[in-house]
Structure formats: C-alpha cells, structure tokens
Length: 438
Ligand code: GDP
Ligand code: GDP
Image (cartoon, rainbow, N blue to C red; front, top):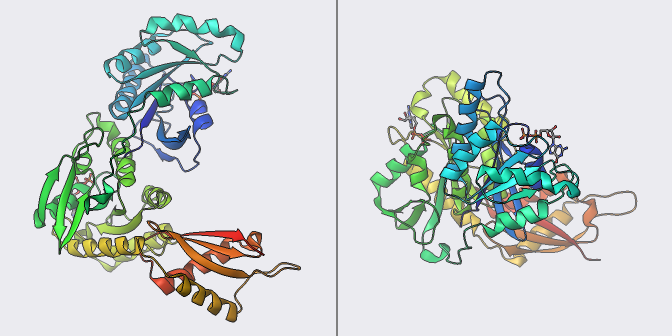
C-alpha cells in the first residue's frame, strides 16, 4: 500500500523547512525547482511509531516584493499540496500572530476536505502556549503549539498526524499472480506513451484495484504468458490541474507506484540525456528494493553518432554507480524495442526473486579465499567463514566473518561484483550484511 503523504504548508518563514528537517529521517530528499519559484520543494521519508510516510516540504516560496504576485503563489502551492496529501500540516508563526497570508492558506486547506492539523510554531517557551489560541480564528480546528527549533511539541504533533492516516490495508496485491511494474520518470519522458503502447499491443484490462487508496488505476497486461500489472497508469495520464506542479505530481505518484511494484521501468528522455533527477529516481527505487530497468526513450530522435555519444556519456556519468541496471533504447512513439523492455523487465524480476544455494555461495567464498582476496589491518586479516541468502526481492545475503569492521566500501563492492558475476543479478539491487563470528 502506498505510504501516506503529509504536506506541510504555510506562508514563508513560519518554519516549515525547520519542522520537516526535524521529522525527516532520510537525507535523500528529492528536490525540485519549478519555474518562477526561487526555492525548492522537497520530499522526505519519515516514520513515527512504525508508520512510514512521505513528508513534503512545499517549502519556501521566497518572499516576492509585490503582494499581488505573492498571494496567488501561496494559494497555488497550497492547492497542489492539498491535492495529493492524506494529511495537511498547516504551519503558522506564533511569534507573529494571524496574518492575511495565513488566512489565504486557511481558505485553501479548509476547502480540501482533508484532515488539517494546525501547528503554531516558534512557541519556544512551553509556558507561553497561550500564544496559540488566537489561531482558532483560522477555522481549521485546534492549534498545536510547537517549537520546530527545539523539538517541543513535535511528538504530540506526530501522534496526531499518524492518527489521521487512512487505516493500514492488510490486503496484499502480491499474491494475485501479477508482476507489479511501475513506469517511472520525469514528466514528458514518455511514460504514458509507453504504458499505452504496452497496453495496446497486449491484452489489457484496466482494473480498479480494490483496497488501494486514492484513484490509482492499474493496467493488467499479458505478454508471452506473463501477467504484468502496470501500476498506477492513471497517475501517468492525469496531469495536475495546477500547471506548474506537473513535476511535483508525477514525483509523488512515482514514489507511490514504486512502493507497489517489484520492478521499475525508469523512462529517460534520450534526447535530453540522463539527468540528475533520473539518477535520484533510480536511487529511490533502489532504496525501496525494486528491480530497475532503464528505457532510453525517444530513440527515434537520436539520429547521429554525436547524439548517441552524448547519451552514452550522460549514462556513464549518472548511472556508473549502478552498472547492473540494463538499458534498452526504445521509442514509445514508433514502437521500437518496446518488447525488449518487457523482456528486460521479466529478466530483472526473475533475478529479483532468485534464490542461491548456500553451497554455491560458499563455493564462491572458497574461490575468493584461494585467490587471496581479503582485507587486513595491522594485526588482523578478514576471514569470511560462510554466507547464506536471507531474503529475496531484493536478494539479501548475510556473511559471517571474524572482523566485520574491516570491510570497507571497496571490499563490499568487490564482493557484490563477484556475487553479481557469479549468480547473474542483472536488473536487481542486492543487499549484503556482515555479522561477526569468531
Ligand atoms: P519556511 O520558509 O516556512 O520553510 O521557514 P524556515 O524553516 O526556513 O524558517 C524560517 C525562520 O524561522 C528560520 O530563521 C528558522 O530558524 C526560524 N524558526 C523555525 N522554527 C523556529 C522555532 O521553533 N522557533 C524560533 N524561534 N524560530 C524558528
Ligand atoms: P509522460 O509525461 O512521461 O507520461 O510523457 P508522455 O507520454 O505524455 O510524452 C510526452 C511527449 O513526448 C509527448 O508529446 C509524446 O508524444 C512524446 N513522446 C513520447 N515518446 C516518444 C518517443 O519515443 N519519441 C518521440 N519523438 N516523442 C515521444
């Protein structure tokens, strides 16, 4: 089930980013700059009492001098946030009092019909909680006094946030025999073109998946006897009403789709090349343990050697750290190689759930020992006694060794590469863990 989304809204300088940074656990925020907005929006992973959620800092629109420009901007960002959020955290500044801009935001969040939690920030001294009461006038319920700087009140706030999440859905989509595939990518790279192309070519049924929240619509296709669920194809088609927020919208939808997928098809616009945002999306898919294949789309536009070289250069630069991600040059427009991307997807799914026998892992370890590949420090020499697979989707392994602290990134990468070349894990991340055993 997709993680609930919490949007933090409010006028500039009330402390939204400070609050988000206090709550977020992950450093790998997606940041996005949209036209005319000087600061970024960012998306953060967070959890509280075992519930994972996505936290959106709708962030700071920097104060623009003219008020006429400013108010609509605030309204727009609040609107966009409300559209996707499950819970809205509306932040105001207790040291300033109610402003016109707060009232502007209040109007938007009230209309959203979503749970709104009103947070009065900068109440640095708990004994001055009374500062919060005037904010009742905003008409969005009881004010919660906090200090994002000091952390005061944030625990209670998070309790309240989590209490407003949709109930956790026990129903699993995983056992229906369909492989969950998310088509992810920046806006306009051709995700919906690819989804349509795949759906048209193959027997396809649009399914309203029971139990999924919001308006996710999956497309079920069958290809060479394989049943594939293209996750949230509605999210690819539907563009945000707020024009500026197409990117925002597709990122959030993409994150949710990843959570419901085993394999991600990362669509990249070859005519632009692989961008930093593409690289980030890859990182997020990998963090979630998804298998990944890359579709270099719009290949019909790559008609000279120079253009080909440029794409490959960007590929090396951005994807060099994950050389296991297979890529296919496709054109969703002409249909070129779209079958190949399905074949790559199925191969990645296969690797993603592959189980390797313990004896085979230990054969490899014996070879490494004979080859003398190890790490040492002054008085110790790493010895990996044995290893075993502890999980799939993605394949996860635990190795028992005399001195796990000797294992550095280099050695881990070396071992990962040997595991990959021995057991063919193309298209899937793998996880290695080291435990001590003397
Ligand atoms: P945003 O524009 O809403 O994201 O606001 P920021 O998070 O950038 O914060 C604006 C300013 O308020 C910064 O100078 C923060 O240090 C300050 N600030 C944020 N939270 C608190 C707080 O709890 N107490 C006080 N005194 N200042 C705060
Ligand atoms: P999405 O926002 O990622 O879903 O992208 P769309 O599928 O809406 O495509 C964005 C634009 O790129 C549209 O104008 C498509 O016609 C165009 N497009 C998609 N795939 C291709 C392709 O393979 N080649 C070319 N030349 N254009 C494409």
